[in-house]
Image 1 (cartoon, rainbow, N blue to C red):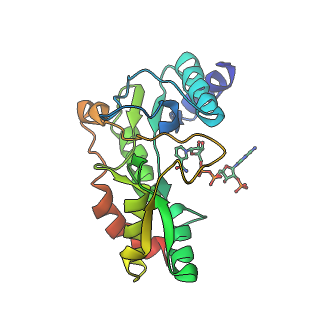
Image 2: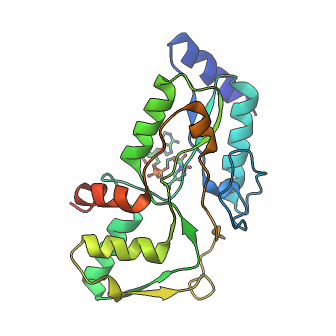
Length: 206
Ligand SMILES: NC(=O)c1ccc[n+]([C@@H]2O[C@H](COP(=O)([O-])OP(=O)(O)OC[C@H]3O[C@@H](n4cnc5c(N)ncnc54)[C@H](OP(=O)(O)O)[C@@H]3O)[C@@H](O)[C@H]2O)c1
């Protein structure tokens, strides 16, 4: 239903604020071979993706001034996240297997927060934007970067496949998002994932 977002939109306007919703790459089917454009057809494959997709539509229908900012592969200093878990398990076990056939854009929560702030401050047109880093890697590639930042040998992270490492819910194989809408709005994109991880690793793994 669009009633919730419509009420939030009204409250936001009254407060001089703007409604920003943060959905996910999981709204896409994950079968693409080039970055998903902001207006690419959505086709979620999991219950999570379906609820996030219906949230997007509710916001579009109920909140005319919305900013829908899809993000993915988040990590940050607060709470649990992939690189923290990988660094801990690598130190405990001395080695681990990580899937190399799912690719995406590891994104620092601090960068996403900064991007959202800049989008709002710039008065960007209502619509859908992608808030992820540039470039791409696999979970295996990201795990190696995490292990290296923890001062361990990245070679202890071995490659595996989604077929061997089965999870209860399907995960998109291809989660690379394009950033054309940011470019069109004149809002600077987040940098390359590897350079941003270099900048973030000290505070995330502290
Ligand atoms: N993590 C990602 O890579 C990613 C990617 C794309 C989009 N997102 C979206 O980002 C949002 C946050 O995700 P996250 O990964 O940060 O999740 P998270 O770490 O599980 O955090 C969820 C937060 O929501 C709060 N919360 C949960 N149920 C609530 C309720 N009924 N009422 C009030 N607060 C409630 C939790 O509070 P407590 O701490 O008190 O439990 C927690 O602070 C979600 O909408 C998710 O779909 C995340």
